[in-house]
Image (cartoon, rainbow, N blue to C red; front, top):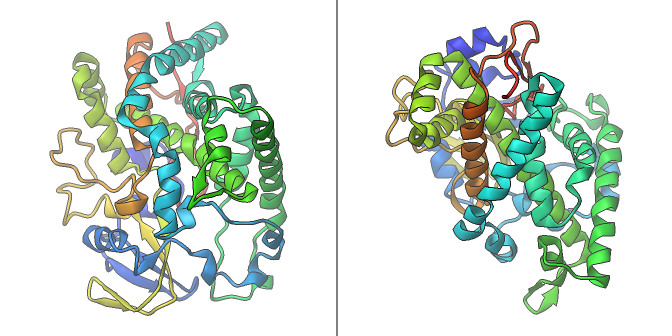
Length: 403
């Protein structure tokens, strides 16, 4: 891990990449007014107990912190919903991500990868994020949802505004003292909402064979989903549905660049690529943290957390807990088993995990076929996302263009 941190000048914001060896697995951050869980067994237990560690974190945020959000409904954000409603909503889209449906996408993923690399070859260089890691998964999820993949520049603009800002709210300080530019988030949020609302309205008039039509026509307990819930559900699928794969691809290439012997092994033995991806997910966890709120007093790691507390679950740190992973800072695709938590655990386990893994495997295989050596360009430094809750690169230029 030291190789990656030092080699790519990892920003200080990604503090958890540098290890939590001297700190406790659970601790209170008085400045932020939140609890942090870093240990693997503690986090594993908490994610398996949604009745105590609720996904509805917005209930703890005072309204004065985000007054502009009041005009928007938060209905339908499956990542913020607890049982029993969570199960009902998840069931609506689970059929779009079954093993067979995902497997049938492989030819399309391969064709898109070749098309995108062909375009990079024409330009004579390969910047992995812009040329492949971003457009590939966003086109796939857009086609599933039923919105134009050609609008991907818009999707990236919205995702950047929502995910790549290094601003965190402290529940321990008054809202007027928070350095949070709410308007910077609200503008793209409204644009995205209006965009998907227009597509949903069009599906009511003219249904198609796509996931958005399925959401518009779906019924829960005999009633159609409210318009706001359809739109919010679509937002989660469109934005979260691609960004994990974008980060997964960039992170895996970083690992193979830092460890050329592992790149040589993967090139010689393609059956090892899934294990390479899993180790990349463990070592450089894309969504490094999840928020939860306690519904009652809870004990984690011999620490008592009161009810109604905000808790940050640091998946990235737990995936390097030496109590679970020997030599946790070493990139070792041979780990077996490797029960990492990169996709979460329990009822909120990432619905799109099979698709992300397939996209990663297909794209990496083709990259190894068409690029002589996956090596980052020392004259064009790697640029990381600026937020500590996400591990990924915004720019990753390679020395060799695809053939």
